[in-house]
Length: 113
Length: 111
Image (spheres, rainbow over the protein chains, first blue to last red):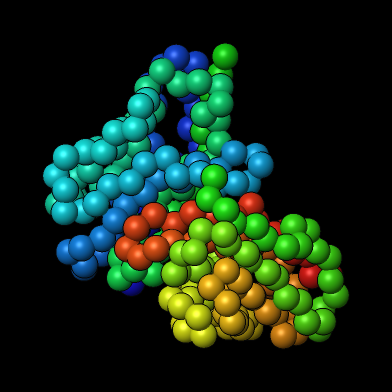
C-alpha cells in the first residue's frame, strides 16, 4: 500500500514571502497521481494542484507550484507571494488504481501579516 | 464547486444506535467515496463505489456499510455506532483516475 508522509506538522511564512511544504510518498506503482489539497477552517477540502506521475514537467497553478522528484519520491508544494488567505491545513495525497487515495497527516500553514 | 452535498452536517448520537449519512451529487460522476478525518491521520478511505450497486472496501471499513441505489446518492451506515467512530466524514466524487472533489463534511459525535 502507498504511504504519504508530511514531516512538517506546522509551518509559518511572512505575507508576500515564499514557503515550501514537504511531502514524500512510498509506492511500487509506476502510474499514479499526486495532489495537494487545502483545508481552511471551514473544513472544505479544496484542490490546489495535481501532478501526473508520468509527466516530468512540474505542475503550476498561479502562485502554487510543485517540485516533483519521482526517483526520490518527493512532491513538495511551493507557495509564492503568500497571502493571508493561504493560511490553512495542507494535505498531500497520492492516488493509484482509480480508487486508492492516501493522504498525509497534514501541515498547518500560518501566514503572518 | 462540484455539486456535492452531505446530510446531516452535524449529528450527535449515542453508542449502539444506527446512523446513516447521506451524500448527494449533481455531477453524474461514476465514482463516490466516503472518508473519515481524524487528528494526526489526514483522511482515510472507508468505502467507495464505482457504479450503482457496485461498492468496495477501503482502508478503514470495519463497522461501516454503504449502499448506492442511484447514481447521485451514496449512503454510509454505522450499524451500531461506537465512540471510536466519532469523526468528521467526507464524501467525495470522481470520474476515474482523476481528481476527487469533496463535500463539506459531516461532524459526528458518538457519546
